Image (cartoon, rainbow, N blue to C red; front, top):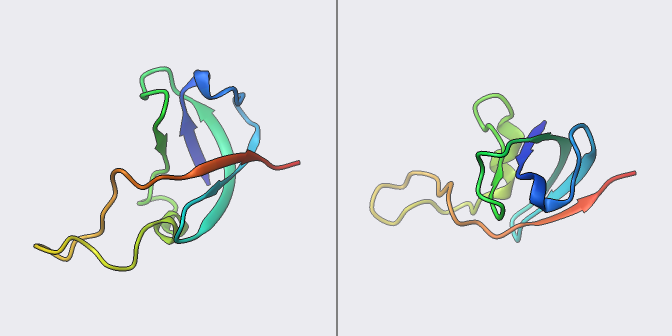
Length: 79
């Protein structure tokens, strides 16, 4: 799983990280992207459907669509 992060996160290209939310976790490899907001984490869910495990099971109350934005998560190094 590719995990795109801003360089200000302190992680380096190719390092392994664990991403955890209140709904799940997954590990992956960092791809540094200077265009991302420093507090954003981007995981391409089309290529890596496991990323959906980080999202709440209940979607938007109006449409039922998954909520992709604003999910707090924690990052930690994986040795």
